[in-house]
Amino acid sequence: MPESPTISAVLSFEEARRAVAEQAAKIAKPPIESAELLSAAGRVLAEPVLADRDLPPFPRSTRDGYAVQSSDLSRVPAMLDVIGEIRAGEAPDKIPSHIGSHHTASIMTGAPVPDGADAVVMVEYTSSHGNQVQVSRSVAPGENIVPRGAEAQNGSLLIERGVRLNDAAIALAASVGKSQLQVYKRPRVAVLTTGDEIVDIECTPGPTQIRNSNTYSLAVQIQRAGGEPVLLPIAPDEPRKLRSLIEQGLQSDLLLITGGVSMGRYDLVEQVLSELHAEFFFTGAKIQPGRPAVFGKCGAGAPACEKVATYFFGLPGNPVSTMVTFELFARPVLEALAGMHPSKLKFVYAKLKSEIRVKPGLKRFLPAILSGEFESSEVELVPWQGSGDIAATARANCYIVIPPDREQIPAGEFVAILPRTV
Ligand code: AMP
Ligand code: MG
Image (cartoon, rainbow, N blue to C red; front, top):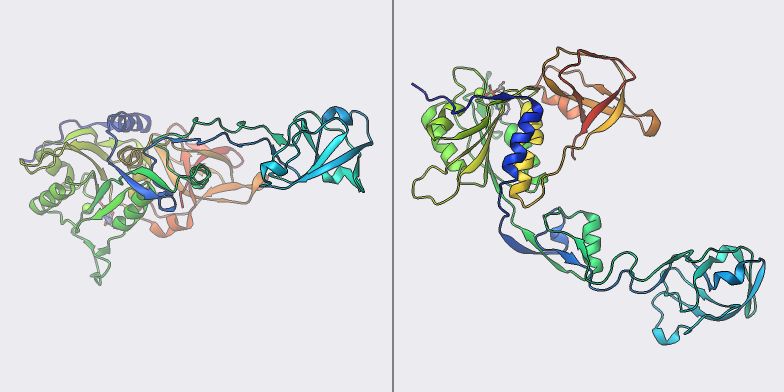
């Protein structure tokens, strides 16, 4: 008699997300390694990055123009004596020590503004006359100058631990001279696809066989979320072989299983995990696609193994269900294992192009196309044959989110959409 899961719980979408967040918060930080600045892009920072001096290190002119005392320009036009020129990177001993009243120095963008001057007037509002310049516009105190230390003070925190390093963060680290960064090691995420009908992509499928695509969509999603995919062989719908591959997958930091979690006679994943004394946090979520998704934790199998219990997800085998449930549930756990603060789901709103009618009761994430730009953007569902339709989903660039209490949404209404990450 197969053992049944310790808890059989079909949760609402929000409850399931909370269950995931609760577990993600318990995950310890991963080990640390060093990375060259450029290869740290996309990695998770494991050390605080501090300002190594004031930023900017001097009062910086943001324009090409003339450094002035703004009070000299309370009445314009005004004639000022030009006492020097300050280029970006000018040696300190070549910079006028002081700009007095009715004096000025021409100055370039990125050059240090000398003492005495409290504004820079743009070159466009001046005309040069030998050693003098005529200024036709007044300026407010501070105009076109970024004061020393206004962006960051020496020693202050610029990037905190746990941040995924994007282009701006890499630029900031470069600006404080970090050619190496401490980053967290990527978690290893085992991918186990199940099903007697599933064959490797190198094989020619028989008439009723299906090529394995879920392993590949998951591998891409894992990499994008900061993990390292570990691809296991395809598991048949046979308990012993499935159990041995699940035990192998539990040696990784996270195990993602696809298929075998529905109600069919050969959907054996929950049964096998129960035999391994798994703890289940949910065994379904009221969503479409992806209703049978399973989340739990399980010891690593081999009794000699010291490894703490491994989180696992049983994701429904339909390819679109696998993709959607990864984003909704597996991603936060993977991000926590990668040392990140798990990111929130980011929804944007767009105008619906054509009416939607659905049965109420499930929160739906349906493949859709967002088109147009700015005020003319609109979104519509992609016609599809259900959650096995990878071709329709590949044409989509987002998912429309339909709340469980809506049966009809008229064209013209603003709907929430979950953008597809590229
Ligand atoms: P299951 O969740 O095992 O009931 O599978 C649901 C549907 O997804 C079936 O039509 C399977 O053939 C299909 N499927 C399962 N695993 C994969 C896979 N790795 N690649 C493509 N399709 C799959
Ligand atoms: Mg199956």
